[in-house]
Image 1: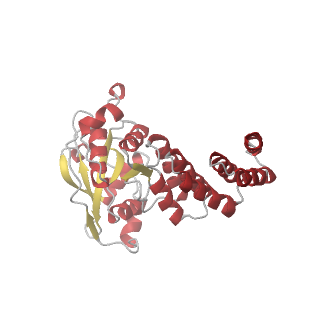
Image 2: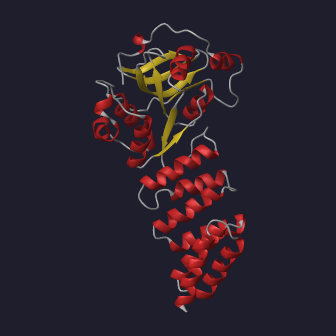
Image 3: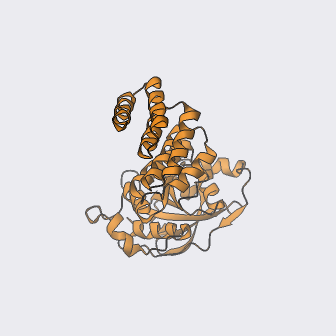
Amino acid sequence: MFAGGAATVLALAGCAAQTALIRDTPPAGLPRRVELSATPYYPQDDYQCGPAALAMALGPAGFAVRPETLAGQVFLPGRHGSLQIEMLSGARRTGALAVEVPGTLEALMRETAAGHPVVVLLNLGLAWAPTWHYAVVIGYDLDEAAFLLRSGPMERQVLPFRTFELTWVRAGAWAFVALPAGQLAASADEAATTRALVAFEKAAPPGKAAPAYRAALARWPDSLTLAMGLGNSLYAAGDRPGAEAAFREAARHHASAAAWNNLAVILLEAGRIDAARAAARRAIELGGPTIDAARDTLKRIDAAR
């Protein structure tokens, strides 16, 4: 994935619209300069920029792991590198919440200002002759109009906004942060966060997603998907009282048939037959795509009598 560093960036052409906007109107509420100097550094050699970049991003999230440990998870020998989906999956398997962030320079600034190093994919070649490379943004300097990166053989690369923007946009302006499960990305919206949480829940041990769902619900309290995710993660972890409370809140707040049905199942398992029947009937009344499941639940409840 890596071929030599900043010196390999070929002659750049085209505009850098975001750079001009940042220079003319710096984002509000951000410090002039940020550098996450505690971010670990691992040299990126022999196409191993993916595992090294991921290891660097995972360190500040509390996951001390070396690139060689990640290589078997994210490095594809046949492709001489790592695909984006493998990078995200590798972070989740380690226990981190991997969230894709918007493809804007401001998003990178807001994430690093929040203490989150950002893994970015760059194209150091040309659109028709790409040289793909993962790097880690560890800060920026508005006065110098530059980003600070861990990149290739350089522990501290200073890359002008314009050069960074052109090489980043040429690669699709893709980036993500790796976070502890209780933290959220500073710049990701509800949809991106929800996608990340659903994927994380599938890869993480039962219950690990619950803190992340709680944090997301605190930011987006009207999300049924997040509310159901919290209930499901608590149930998978064996926390029946917590799952009951989560599904009850989701059922009432959203008038959700699925939440009422899940609540009915938990109440049935607890032997609270009358309450379970009432919840199942409410799910049936609301109808929708889960009505057959609710009817099956009600049959189980009646059989338990």
